Figure 1 (cartoon, helix red, strand yellow):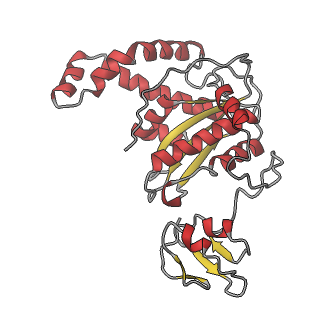
Figure 2: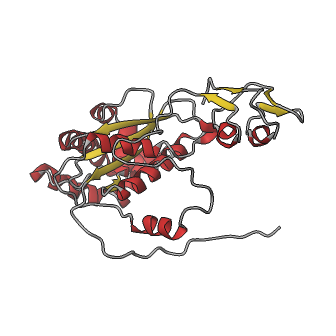
Figure 3: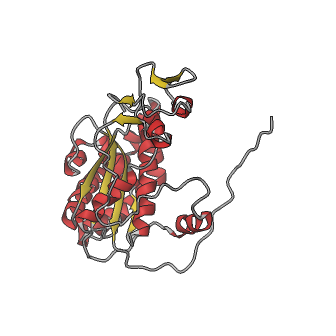
Amino acid sequence: MKNCVPRIDAEACLGCGACAAVCPSGVLGFDGRKASVVAEGCIGCGHCAALCPAEAVTVSAGENWTAAFATIDAPGKVVAPGEFSPAELVDLMRSRRSCRCYTSDPVPGPMLEDLVRAAVTAPSGTNSQAWTFTVLTSRAAVMRLGEAVAGFFRRINKLAANPVVRKGYALIGRPELENYFREHYPSVAAALVKWDRDRTDLLFHGATAAIVIGSVPGASCPTEDALLAAQNMLLAGHAMGLGSCLIGYAVEAIRHDKRVRAAAGLPTGEAVHAVVALGWPDVTFLRHTFRRRPIVRYQTA
């Protein structure tokens, strides 16, 4: 985060040097008696202010937007490592599932905003916080985006159905269309038939809201930042009683078609990394399901 300026109250400083030791950018120094600002380049992480026992350090980084939530009564406690139940956290993570059955009830605007607040408590590379969130607050807005996504895939399917076009792309080193035809064409074609027939929604599955997570230029790892924010949003949504699902097809359509971008209400110049469908679940899961053992490697030296 740019334009951050740490300030140290020399009179209040106890001389512990903790702020300088924790500064990731080398902006703060410690001469054995007092801490001071010794360089530029503060990324606004706030570590120094968060650990100063005398509250002698402040970081001017604008409004603390996550200081209060509208629909969640958070007491504001700082939870230190080891102070939260890992068992409860694991149960939350295992219980959250991708929801594809929603009621028709809308999600209140304050809840959607609180989901964004929860999302931006995630870490970001060099603390860039370059996220953007485009919130579709109604079923009508979700359907409008769904129609634009359907139009994109109609055009892609038309291209992919032509073997000459597929082979031509492959010959110039572009096998994506051939891969798409093999892996996605049949299911997308079937979904489009149902959508065109009676608006059966196999994309957003009846969700009454959605949030598009993007980024403005300047972040060091914007995709990773957005997906970390999305995971926060998914877990917070589950805790709030909402269902959620990541919609990868919508991401691809927005990335490749300006008409879909316009339907989502996105300006030019923003990258898109995730689309989260949201709504009140019309299904109750009674137990956890399995996860395969991943490839895990350990190195001891």
